[in-house]
Image 1: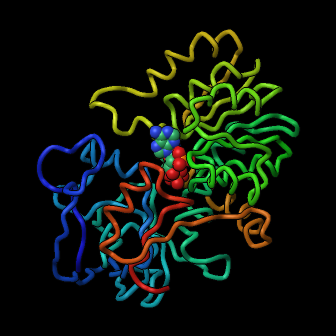
Image 2: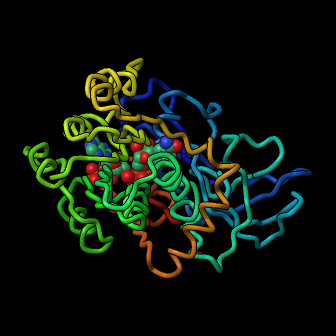
Length: 341
Ligand code: NDP
């Protein structure tokens, strides 16, 4: 069983080529209440870097990640050999799930129904990312027809869903992305009304021009200069969901990016009565996952909600793919496929 783990020593601000090391161990046998599974897809997500910097995972353990896997041997009630599952094998070829196996508490293993969509989508639009977008957009920001909604990291795993959900509510949706190709994707393929690039030195002006009626909802994935470009455009009574602040995930230790953003935004938030809410998807996992699936899965099946994945191949690809995703060299939701599905 090969796996990647965090190298010993200080964790850098952003991942470097020597930040992760490959290890090899025996494939474990499941005890009562556990199942052994083989990893098919590893989901690479920005929060995993926070886990490294805060050393959330047990020392020497495989890097945590959500995965799509197949059960090899089961002593876990409700799971049989051959079942396809959502679980958290991490950056590893095999993993145990069930009793006594460490995982974030809201990431409960579950059996997948391949008839509702490609199995890789269980870590994307039909899984935690769908729930993130649904919770942050539909449940928290609740855009109305005709309102202007801005989504940053708009072509990424969460952003592409969040923007399309707002379109489905009749809003006018403006994306912010990096490369122009990503902008073209969200407007031409996903139906966003406009898109601007944060790589342009004229971002504030271009965003203002793209939002002539101001901004009613901002789905924040980024922070930094992108937030600063949105801030002056908020309309009275606007809503902002802070989903993530990826531009700050390499900030010096101890800096509270959210607190700094709130401080910077306060005069405008107060003067214009902007409601700012912070999203944590784990808060919605138990009560809203099935509701999200019931809403989103038929839209995906009907082609009314499109979803782009960036799937890299092979176990060796994991560390580089992760670093690329953090700096925007992914195009769509980043996954690594370890075995054919
Ligand atoms: P993405 O697929 O969107 O990948 C990350 C993207 O962030 C990159 O492709 C890049 O897009 C953009 N980016 C990176 N650095 C910068 C920067 N300095 N300035 C502007 N854009 C940058 O990842 P996800 O969809 O998985 O995650 C999106 C956000 O959602 C993250 O902030 C993440 O932490 C958050 N999240 C929060 C959850 C919650 O519970 N609150 C749950 C899941 C995700 P581009 O090339 O367009 O710049």
